[in-house]
Length: 58
Image (cartoon, rainbow, N blue to C red; front, side, top):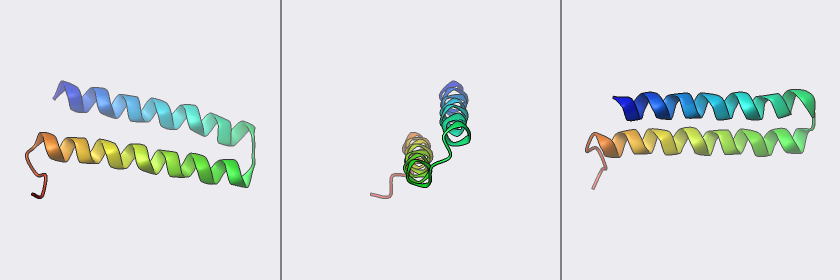
């Protein structure tokens, strides 16, 4: 439970941190890169939660 909460808070902080850059530096290429990074972070968090529950799919 503590890992899920810590991971969620970390993802939230990264999204807020990178969202600040999208707001302050309105550039389409930068926005695309930041959006891709956020997708990778959320996917990794989802995968780590799935492997923690034993749902690895193997």
